[in-house]
Image (cartoon, rainbow, N blue to C red; front, side, top):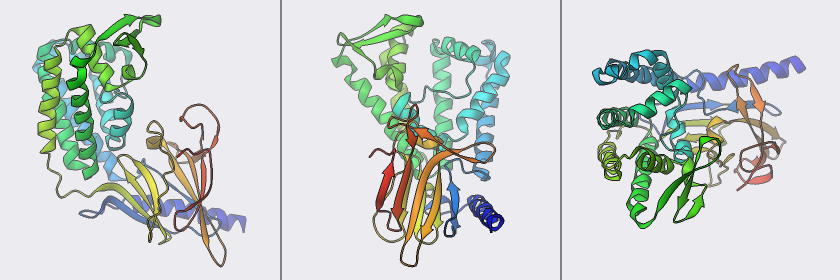
Length: 350
């Protein structure tokens, strides 16, 4: 019996992976699938969309723009060719999974936090961006990258990009009402003082990045504002009318749905308006995978949702988090019925 149960669990996970490989063009989700989970069985749903061609397509876009940067006469004069491997790695890393990263980056460091950035390349790029000629070259290219992804991804990606840029513009328009000062602190880091009071929230955001460029690199405030306005104008017009609304929709047992959007994942019943968000922390959700277990009797079906990590070896591992998403507390676990009404939860914050 144990061998049969193990086989059934393996088939449930395999069925999910096969479903994720099917693109649902011109429907509500870019990727749609259906899985059946038997009693006392489980399957993993994940924002990594393993096996999907989406990942391949993202990497093609990343490689395309890596080629463009490396072929630029202006950047070659600045010896970008000496960093070719690093540039290619940076573009691959940042174009892979960009859909689910935008809101995360907005919450923490906007478009500044580049993944796959070596120490050498980081220093090189910071020096490059001190030059107005380079900024004038780079911003239109970055705009085209985002524009291409707006046309490629579901509609909510464009919505989040535009919202992020509008938030930056709102912050910049309010800047003249405040005074800003950077004071050198420990470990060669700078503390930000706003109206004479130390501020620990802004430095780790895109707004902090903008302030450092203005205060440390003497980049004119109006120049940066002009770039944001230009990007907004272009990206608001980005074509995505034929795109689906969200990335992923999985039908589970014809009772509940798992949705993956650019702002997070959630479960909803097939009928009714219940909704369960397994993780609200923006620094965590895009890395998590939910293990869905089914427990039922002759009257009712219950679902247990557990947060974990779906590693490169495609093995789900439970995750220990606290309410802020850092450190160790307990495994987040939710027990709900088929109407997505929560019966019990542990380690979750709402």
